[in-house]
Amino acid sequence: MEAGFELGFATLDDEVADRSLAVEGSLPDWLDGALVRNGPAAFEVGGERVAHWFDGLAMLHRFSFEGGADAVRYTNRALRSETYRRATATGEISGQFATGGGYLQRVRQLLFDDPTDNCNVHVARVGDSLVAMTEVPRFLNCDPETLETLGEFAFADALTGHINCAHVVPDPHRGETVGLLTAFGRPSEYTLYRLPDGSRSRERIATLPARDPAYVHSFALTERYAVLTEHPFVTNPASFLLPGSDSFVDNYDWEPERGTRFRVVDRDTGDVVATRVTDPWFVFHHVNAFEAEAGDPAADGSAGETDELVVDLVAYPDAGVVDGLYLSAAEDWFESGQDGQLRRFRIPLDRGRVTSESLYEGLELPRVARGDRTKPYRYAFAQGAAERDGNHVAKVDVRTGDARRWEQPGLFVEEPVFVRAPDAERPSDEGCVLVTALNATEGRTDLLVLDGETLDERARAPLPHAVPFGFHGRYFPEW
Image 1 (cartoon, rainbow, N blue to C red):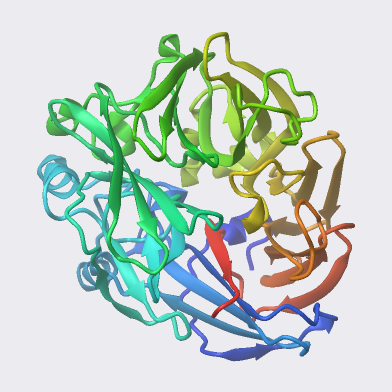
Image 2 (spheres, rainbow, N blue to C red):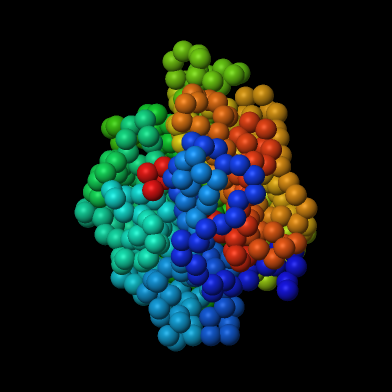
């Protein structure tokens, strides 16, 4: 059996349906819903290994809870995408994030009508559908209980693009979700859109020109504004048409002399109300954002008029993290313990310079409570820095700088999802943290339930197999 983090990059073929898991400890009696996670699970096709973590074939995992019962039911199922069916039939996989397939195939798949549907990044609810998402605008409709792949999901609108930002941002306070598309052309452009709750029809908020589009994995949202963070990891779309590179990411370059540009868009009018440039940073994930008065030391929304936006994100000094996640480089990456820093940016709306400060060193995959999105908040939960013998769950008080951590030797935790208790008010940390963890010692994955206030372990449910390292998930109280 493989030991350590390597097990997180081993293919999982085993599928189970509605399996009851033994629970060690006690679950909150109010926990009633389902955690659905997405991520790569198959790294070998036809005897050949994919190049990058981001390229593994997708698998969904569902953990369901019944309020008042110390019970967890588990289902996992590979997405039966066209990419999956083609790969299993031909023994080949190509046209992915960093796994190429030749010049002509790259052009056809990325710029025309046949991009990958290997939706291995995230999940979202659209209307009554559970939708799996990736970084091109193809979406798969899945049964929210059985995880069966029901076919391709189509929005009821005409918005198009070549790149899809897989991190749509639900705003429960306005009853909508905001997303972003990137279209290559002359000129290239970003399209911000809103999707009203219960609808399948997206509405354009704004279209922004983009001469050399950035790789945008996520963006930020406040009550009134969308903030597009354009780091200098950019592409000239014409490069996709030239021979010499085989994969999507090969066509992006780190150009730090550009700096990082924040473009602030009014969510109601679509107007760009501010454009500010700061030092070059690379970012995968935003934590949260909100409006504040300039110089408000508490940044808690208690001050007066909005003069600046506070944007919290996970920053890297360059785009080296992308290369660090090639499977061939994973060992060096884990041994280095490298990870991003939780960094707070203050963006003036009128004039002045962007300022920033580090709040926590060494984390990724950050989450906040659903009700805290777009609002002043207090607590962020994240996956702590990766090391060869394990990592940790981090909880950061962004107002005071205090931090807690939970860890166990031999455990590699993934993205922690904080679920606030139903009767708790913002910005309380009363609730629980749901997090899956590869238990390298036992050769399996465990579902952990931690106390939101103390990070003490409340419950644990061992899975019947080891799940490869995944990406993102959501807790759905209705499912």
